[in-house]
Every structure is written in structure tokens, then in C-alpha cells.
Image (cartoon, rainbow over all chains, first blue to last red; front, side, top):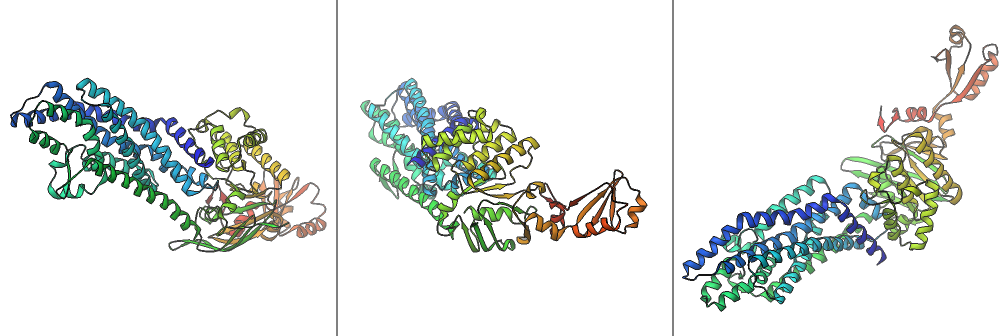
Length: 301
Length: 304
């Protein structure tokens, strides 16, 4: 336990003292927030207005803005919980490159302890950055149009925690195989550019081809995005319902922004989404921890 | 003296390249053991295997009585390693680095503090405690590397080219500290170096070439076997030296004559007493041994 505490303390200190690592993690959500609000905001707004007008309904600017902000922030949080986890987990790769990992191993610390140490420290750093981003996001939504309840906010924070856990576990597994600057940069680029698409954050999954939708429905990240979106937008849909918007219109919007997700035509409930995410985290963590043990056996043989 | 390192028939290949080829040697407790070879000779591969960081293809390794295959944790606990390049966390302070490593060894905070004081005095880094490692000079960082390797009081200190690139003053400080540690704790030092004058002070030397032992013995044995002696003559003229019929070189007006061994030198002096009024006899150097054994010069690690 003392060893685990020492390794976690070291990793967290290194993360916050390494300005390049810290600011790279921090700048990702900031850039995404600016890009989303500048470019995507208007597109989302027009899309909502068009959908409502087509259905013969009309909504106040506040409701439209609240709806757009909720979608933007949910997309932002869905992406950064994973990309920030990958960025902050670069420490694990840097330790291999600088030889620090060889030095840590010489202390006869167990590989499992080292692996858990990297994971916990990474999770902590990711939660700090993503938690701050969530607060900024909530402020943005409050200014744009607030429809969330206390329980929505709590569920949103739970989603951020779960997705950060998922991102940390996934990045730990992938970074386990990364051992050079070139590979590190390639992984960073692929994740930054690709994850937002395959989790349905940059573009709703409903707009993808059927085959791609089926493929994406097997990825746990998709359900995490949907969970966040459901919790940020629930209040908006409730308001629409109170304003007597046709149920079909509300369900149509839910389908179009991936609040409703389907697995082979079967609608996935919120509780199932939670189960999928939690099971995925458990499986990824089990794989990661056992990889450390396998490595030890390989060196011994 | 008992053996503290026992390596038998150790082999390791990378694809077609045999990095270590049926290597066997022993290191005695308290010894300064020099492990020499040009880059690629197999030194670092052997050290990585000894530290349990690289798997071996075959052979047995015992360190401090612990079998590498069965008691890896005990092997590692017996070793303190100063790697070729500093592996400490450059963004953290000296004390943060040492405290973290100490905690990973399971050393209690109070014991760590007393050990830190001992090492700070020995290696003279008391004033560097709160400095960031990345901002230290090469010599200062090397001192902290050694402190880190010694923090858990290992039986064996592995120094992998510890003084490369350091100024003479820092090299002296480091060697004085290591000598003190050996004297006080009977610590074994396993050294790889490109400085032959450091190897000349070793108790035992192994010269590695292409993964195999090319020569081994005490520095004296190696010098006697692989090099001759040199007699430097002063205040003589060149023709008299030529008449001796031995190879010589003119060094700023003095003449250095090569003889096969000390007995030959003695014989030469007795035969030519009129010539040998002002002279000195020195044995060949470890550089000459290395050149003779491997056919390569060991200068900054590059074979020449």
C-alpha cells in the first residue's frame, strides 16, 4: 500500500509539474469548447429550428439555445474524458522512453502495483481536468438556457467519472504497447481525430450509414456519449413536453441527437447504458492488470 | 571471500546477433570488478539480464546468493544501479526523487531521513535537496544518481559508465565516495567504464569482445600477459639507444624503449650501466592491454 501511495504521489506530482503535459491536456477541452461554440453551435441551432418548424412547432430562443448548449457540452465532455486520459497517460510512455520505468522496476515494486499506480494517478489528473471542464460547461449551459435539475447534474458528474475511468483504462492498455515518441504522437493524433467521430460526439450516429451504425453500436464509448447527452438534455425535452410539443417530435429529436440508441433495432435503456459502461471498465481494467503480470512472467522465463 | 555474483554459461541473442555468448564469470564480495568492452560487446545486455530487465536465452545468474529465475525481488534488492543516463524524474526535486524511490523500497520515513543525511554528507549534495533534478549540472545529477542507487544500502553497486562526460574534480569526488562506501560497508562494485585508469584500480577485470570473454584477471596479470614494460631514458643520444636494437620512440628528447617484461628490462640495465643513469621503468597501461586483447582502442566507447 505504501508503494502504491508513493507511485501515485510521484505520478500526480509529475503530471502537474510537467507544464507541457498539463497544458496539452488542458488546452484540448478549451480548443474544443471554442470550436464547438463558434462553428457547430449555429449548425445545431439551425438544425433544431428546422426540425421544429417542419413539425409545425415553435420554441423560444432560450429553449433552442439551451438545447444547443446541452448538445455541445455533452459532445465536449464525451470527447475530452477520453482524450485527456490519453494525454495525461503519456507519462507512462515517457517513463519508458527516459528509462525511469526501468529504475522504478529496480525497486522490486510489483508490476501490478506500478500498473495500478499509473492508472489511479491518470484517473485523478483526468478527473481534475474533466471536472473543471464540466463546471465550465454547466456555467455555459446556465448562461445559454438552464433546464437541468440537481439530479441531472449529479448524473452528469457520474457520467464524467465513469467515462474518465473508461478513458483511463483504455489509454492504459494502449499505452502499455507504446514505447517511443513517434508511437506516442501517432496514438495522440489518432485518438484526438478519431474518437469524437466513433463515439458520436462530433456527428450524431443517426447520420451514419446503417452498417457503420451497427459497428459503432458495439463500442462502449457510444453509450457513454448517449448517457451524457441524456443527462444534459433531459430537462430540455421535459420542457418541450410541458409546452405540449408532439411526442413524435420530441422522440424524433432524441433519435437525431443519439439520446435514443438502438442495438439491432432494440432501444437501449439508460440503465443498460450504465451497465455496458461499468462492465466495459471492469473488463478493460482486468485486461490491463493482467497484462502487467504477463510481462513479469515473460521477463522471468 | 565468497562470490557475490555468479554467472554461468549466460547467452542472449537478438535475432541473428549473439549479444552474449556463453559468458561465465564470478565477482567476489567487496571487490571492485571492471567489465570492459567497446559498445556492442555485450556489457549492457549482461547488466540488463542481471537486473531482471531482459530475459536470457540460457545460463544461470546468482546475485547475493539469490537465483535470478526464482528470487527476482531479492536479486533486485541486492543491487543498486547507476544507469548510463540519469533515469531520475527531471521535473521533480532531488528530495522528491529520493523519497519516492525510498518509499518504493518500503523504507520508513524516519530511516529515510537518516539515510538521506548520510548520503548527502558522503556525496556532498546537502545544498541541492530542493533543486529540480533537470536543472542540475551533469556532475551534480550524477551524485544524485549514485545516492538513489545507494538509498536502500545494496550489497552490490552497478556503475554503468558512471563518469562519462564528467570533469576530473567530480570524477574524483564520485570515486572517493564509492571507495568510502566499499571500505565502510564491504560493498561490491561492478563497473563498466571507458576510462582505463579507472579500470586499472579494479581488483579484477573482464574484457568482453563480441559477447565473449576475451581476457580476464587482475590488472597486473593482464598487464604482464598482454603488454610489455617501457623504459624511459633521459640525457642519452639517439645512436646509443638505436644500438640497443629494441623498438623505441622519441618523446620530447627522452626515449621510450619497449621491452617484453620487467626481467628483460633488468637484464638490459645490467648490460648497459653507462646508458642507464637517469631512467624510469613503467608497466604497460590498461589501454595497451585492451588494444592487445581486442585489437581496438577504447576511447569514449568507440572502437578505433
